[in-house]
Length: 153
Image 1 (tube, rainbow, N blue to C red):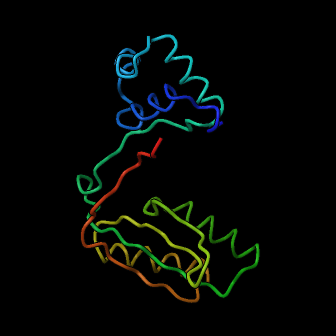
Image 2 (tube, rainbow, N blue to C red):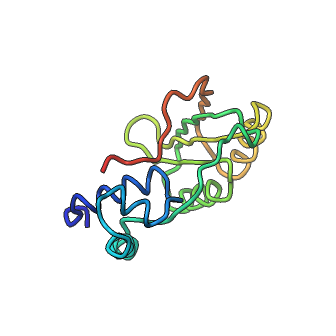
């Protein structure tokens, strides 16, 4: 679908990524179109899977989630059963914001948001009680320099 997106589609996506709460009239004005064609384009991009969902961004610190850890995981387990248990463990934990399987020396990296180091330790203890992990390294983010959900369109 990406190759079928024209300039107006991309401008609509840019507007929605900046603020999905904008009205169709506001988006149409910003992209130089009218409301109905913009609505049709948005609907088409939803139907094709370009737009997957709309959500609200919340300041984690406003919720008391002041500690952000990047967790590097190495495992000696590579069987399908272990991977399924690991995936289920991650999916069930709301403090895991992102999880990526990597190429290289580290098998997985997690982005974990918790109130403090004690809460991270509780997360860690629960995780290793559920699945066998060879090595875990936790890195505390001292400062968030850039964070965005806006993709370059």
